[in-house]
Structure formats: structure tokens, C-alpha cells
Length: 132
Image 1 (cartoon, helix red, strand yellow):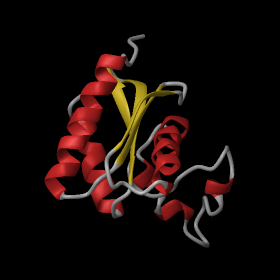
Image 2: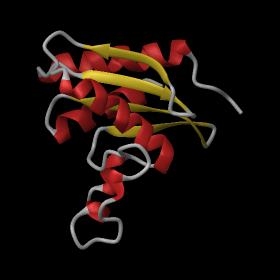
Image 3: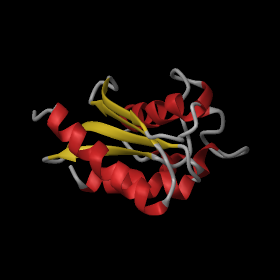
């Protein structure tokens, strides 16, 4: 299976930073491999420090669940089928900003973005994945 390289990760980080600048929101952007291990990370000037961990957890959640974190939002609301899921498996994140990265139909990594609104995080993550 093909792997996510540092060159791939850096290209995604660069695209994410460019998008974050264009929307005027400094971000924390993490790229992990298929095991959830950090390959590349950036904290833009002015991005909140609390989101360093959140961005990495979003990327790891996307790997563990093999889906965008935004897809977990409805299923983890009180009364929903997966309510409480975020308290399991090392602190999953169940709101948008984490997106898996696929190569030839196989998940090879994920991007996690945090520091803006959920919509802003998703927008920057999508830009990063598009650069892959």
C-alpha cells in the first residue's frame, strides 16, 4: 500500500495555511499517517494553543473511525446511537475539522484542523486534503 510522505504532508499543510490566511483565521493544522502518528504540524501565529491538541485529535479520530469527524456530530448527540463515543478510545473528537486522506481508495492518513469555527476548520481541512 502507498504511504503518506512528509512531502505529501507538507503540501497539505501549505495548502491549509494558504486557505486559513484567505479566510483570515489562524489555525493549527495536523497531518497524521495511517496509524494516527503525527507526520507534520503547524501552529499559525495567533492560533489558540488549546487547539493544538484538538487538531491532532481530529486527525486521529478520522483515522480511527475512517471518516470525517463532521460525520460523527449527529450520531453522538444526547439520545443518539453513539452518544458518549468521544469519551472512549483516547478522546475522540466528534465535530468537524478532521478528514481522512485516501490514495488509491486506501486511507493513508488524515488532516485535523482547529482554532476557528467548525465551518472554518472544515474549510481549511478540505483545502489541505484537496492538495494531496
